[in-house]
Image (cartoon, rainbow, N blue to C red):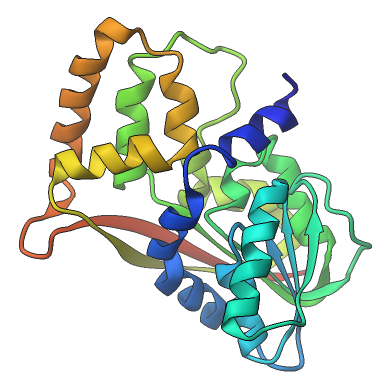
Length: 263
């Protein structure tokens, strides 16, 4: 299976539409930070089920949504129709090889989607390439100290070593890494921290939902020995508990929002 076929499978299995509902407030935060107006042409990279694209279109912008997974685009189209938005131009494509001319968009956005594209340096350069000079790029990424990387670290301990694997996607949540990847292609980088809550009845309930809904974890778990799965479950629940707010029945997920101006 090629790397692109693998990525498509990861984002097709499970139920990302259920997960994506947790990120609606993050999408609004991102569109606001990008300063999107009705005069802007906007690209939503790795648009998933359309949270950011639809939010930007409802602000009056001319919006293009792109995702590598056809099933995601189908879900995004359906969500746009329900939201009463019929102006978005949807494309299938790869964040590391965007099918657009240079200097096409006023604002280029991605909500925890670009961070899974490999190689990451190419994903960074493509964001800059398709954005007009003086335009804005903005994206959200899980911070390395947040729950998703913590869970990924636990899982990694049960998987075979992969010396040829890509860098951890959560490095996109580190300012130093972001600045190295964007380099001189941007100026005026700024950061903001936000959180989203995934409602759940308990840490054990959270892990059960992750196993049912998250393609990233579903596919990776296929490599875990059956005998190791009870110990993995116990370790996951312990980690999730550190981020679980019992007073709200919610898992708190921290992200960093990066905004920059293209040189």
